[in-house]
Image (spheres, one colour):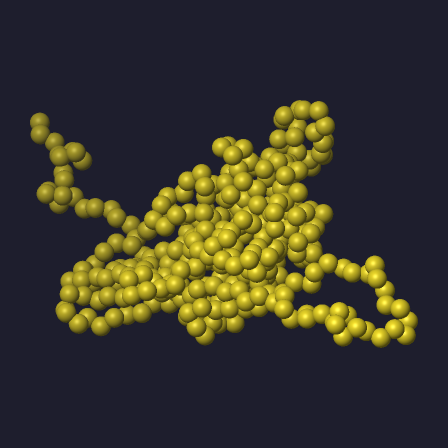
Amino acid sequence: MAIATSYDITSVQGAREDLSDQLKRVSPEVCPVFSTLKQSKAPRALLTEWMVDSLGEPVFATPPVDGADLSFSGSFTDQISSRVRMGNRIQQVQRPYAVSRLADKIDVAGPQSNLYGASAAKSLVLLKTDIEAAICSGNRPQTGTSSVGDMLGGLRHWTDPTATIGVFDTAAKQEFRSVSGSRFTTSGTTMPTEAELRTLVQNVYEAGGKSVGYTLYCGPLLVNAITDFSRASATAVGGAGNPTFNQSVGDGSLSLSITSWISDYGRIDVVPSLFIGRGSGTAIDNTARKAGLLIPKDDTVSLKTLDGVGTVELPDVGGGGRRGFAEWCGTVCVLNARALGSVV
């Protein structure tokens, strides 16, 4: 006897589809650096600049003799000559989108049935990841031409203690680079030990002289390495000299993650990031997984935004459909590169 089954009744016979109005993005979109950096005064030119100065070393070995006159040929010092002008280029970041007139009229599944609105919303999310990767990159500032736009200098460039080009293209500017010992370079799968990371923070403190607290933005492998400083790994390894910690598990929870490290030079919050050291248009790789940026919690690093994140709708001139783009225009301002550290 013939029987209709679920395998035989297809869309041809009228079987309906069950497509819910759910849409889940499956790619990372959290941008902690862009979200947490302070905003400073908006720039007024394509090159935004600021002044830096140094104090020199303390001098007290030759106290003045009471009643002696100062020598006009040698007793006075020019305290302004040590100033240096630093700066960064303003960069535009754009994500264009377009939807044809007919596609904009049809009914589609998803939380936003309007394809143009959905395209604009997605472009804003993509734009945020673009900005995050740009400000965390190792790109050097680039002056725009008729064929290529201006590019900002990223934080991996600002934290390079050996840079002689880009931001630090003169001997005077190189005096204000991140100091030697403020950057740990990973080798293969070798990540910094607790002692090595502590030394890095010490070098940054000695150069900046502040215990204001820091945020350490980390790729996944660096996050794992810092967690390995915890009692879990120390106990598991069982080597000589490993410390012993007491873990309270009265509520049935065992915490094995380090999200904040109270160092000798201030509190360091450990924040995971997937966009440090990412190349443009490239997936996350070991460079990004091992990367880290140590940034003070004061105004040392800030964003200077010429125009906020937003969308611009263009007129449908040719009749093909609605078009627009999401855009941000700004740069990153580093008042004191000596106060920064990095892991590369």
